[in-house]
Image (cartoon, rainbow, N blue to C red):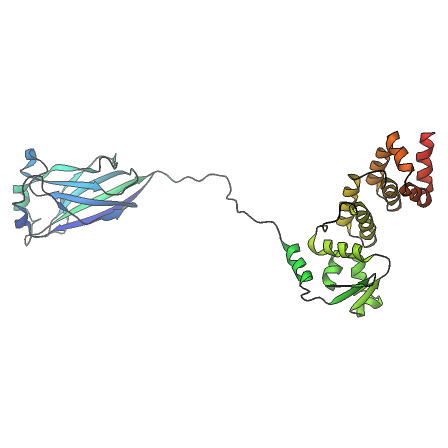
Length: 332
């Protein structure tokens, strides 16, 4: 538990004019705030009810619209001679509720005692309220505070530089088409480009170089991946062929992530027309997982019979004759 303590002094002037107000008539203090709640003091010069007409009554009123504060309080009068609080009455701790918002002392002090005291000076009196608001202890969960962090958008930013040609400093010619790019981004993505653009090769001193062993659409797709870290949208019918070409390009330029993505796509996209060429790629580029998936697909006699009749299987026999012959021998 922890407590918040506060004091409010309520000065009532022109006491003589209050004497004819009658029983149950009160004077209200201004609103004051202690413990985060609003309060007022009600002072009844002739008592709050008939049975206490010989007394002054004093009440503490809870004015906030919400909350049920647990409190203890006391009322005193200020002795103008000594400056001390006298005739103090204290309450027991209890909870204020909005439905029962006033608590106090109907018999706070007899009127004749008050009028004979040093608490009345120049027709004024001061009522002192000392209020303690009892708060529950503050506890904190051990669960750490989490901050929502959005995913990185660095590739969107890099892609924006490419699309808007901001800061491009190298031109790559592929298949008669020119592509603008940034030397540092190409070098950061590929050890091959790094050696080409910042090594001892003659291209390092030029602002333009050619790639002669790749088609323009394949380079464009590879460049898109370097900047955006995703593959561009492809036509479904050309998807497998493009993925095969991209796998070769990724292997050549040591783009490991692109190589794995292409391998994954090819593993899930077999049909009789492409399984032969895909198996040849797996053999030539040392892709054991892709090779195993091709062989599993061809383990079905129906699939194997369909594949043998395609140009792709003929390509397999020409480029990887040992693999093709092993497959055919299993049929015999």
